Image (cartoon, rainbow, N blue to C red):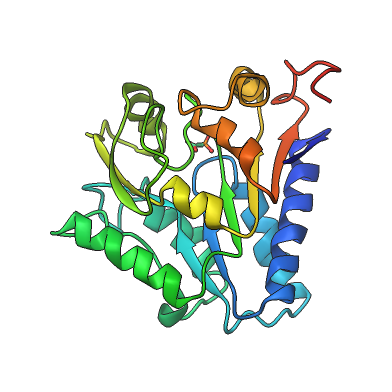
Length: 245
Ligand code: PGA
């Protein structure tokens, strides 16, 4: 794992956006997995505008969503589906056949996971996975003490995730389960970008880098990935010392 600290969030987002564009240039038929949340928003805005400005051909490129809250419809602005539509898929006019998102209202949630796995196989595996980091160190909905040996699955959400997740929704929302790519997908992904910004992430970032690698903090698993970047702004990196650098 390589980690880089940027002075401001804007520089982090600029670096990440260029990196995503490079992924498309090097494999125009490839597949990118996108996280949602506050962290990647600026990265996606720059990614979308530069991809268009630079006239990169992404007409055969594919996108999937990392996760989704169970019970949240596509039309709810707090959901992952809505976020990716709004910030990436609609602005880029990505064709239906080129993306696949979890349906949080699926009648059969296990089939929903198998369908995601099958889609990833069909698109020849994930070239780039963009992830954030939860306040408890989760990756997607891979929560502390979950089983890392899984592809897509139905996850039970921890109390922290249920509480923190309220920030995306206008009204108090019952959040107890999520659909998520598992850490097997994370390790199989040819490249990973993990992004974190803001002082509220400083403690979990220090632990991600210096605690033992274990499922107590799933994000520590990034240190086992062969081709991963951890991109931080100075606020998120504030508790790292010279030993870490
Ligand atoms: P955030 O969420 O980007 O809104 O902080 C990160 C996460 O829970 O993975």
